[in-house]
Structures are given as C-alpha cells and as structure tokens.
Amino acid sequence: MATEDRTEELEAELGKIKCDVIGISETRKRGEGYTKLKSGHKLYYKGLENSSLRGIGILAYAPTSTAEDKEVSKFYEDISEGMRNNKTSQVLMIGDFNCKIGGQADPVEKYVGKHGLGKRNLRGSTMVDFLEEEHLYNANTFFQKKSNRKWTW
Image (cartoon, rainbow, N blue to C red; front, side):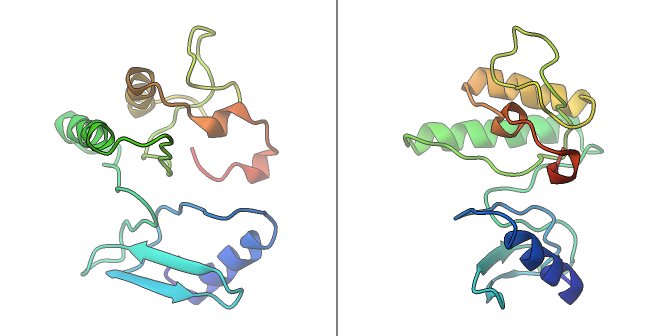
C-alpha cells in the first residue's frame, strides 16, 4: 500500500465496487495521516512511525500468528472492554485479525457462514470463540463470492 503502484491498484479496485467505507489492513504507511487519492477517495491511515510494517485504516492491529497466546488474549480482551465501554447499536470490526477462520466447521456455529476462505487455523479458532462470546457475526463468510473477490482470510 505504501508504494505508488499499490495505491494505483487500490484505486482500480475501488472503481469496481460500490462502498462508502472500506477497512484496509497492512497499509504499510508510516505514521498517521490522510491522503486524497486521484479518484477523490480519502485514505486515512495509521502505522508505525519508524517502520512500514503493519498499518491500518480502522480499529487495532491484531497480533500476528507468531505472537504469544497472552498477547492475543489481551487483544481480544481490549476489544471486548472497548465494546462494553462504548455501547452502540452497531459494531463493525474490519480486518483479517491475522487468522484463518475458513467456513463454518459445524452447523452449530451461528456466527460463521459457509463461505470462508482457507482452512481454519489455531488463531482462527480463537477468533471464532471470540465471535461466539460477543455475539458477533463474521459477515464476510455468509456471502458466496468468486475466489478472486476474496481478499482476506
């Protein structure tokens, strides 16, 4: 996302979809800022000051699959606390959370649909447990899409 080529690629994809807000993870932009793209879209971003790793457009950066379980647990606890302290009628969490949840593994799973990408990994199981506890749906898994339209885990 940090290079001009990636920005042009983003703009090309934006022209193919109709959306008012899109969450972007792995922006690889340094610091915090705002850019008006050639298309007129506004890109707000936040990343590390001294590194082009990570970077997001909305919410928090999830620990990677190599992070300690304690760090992952703390991440989900922070989200739960934030939701409890900031009551709203709608909650949207955007990003892949550095996990693979795949599709619904069991018909009993209410918060995951049948159309996920890939096969669930250990961090994906943690995410599904979190969804169940917080009564949140992974909306992306409820809609069948062509494989070239599935951009995240």
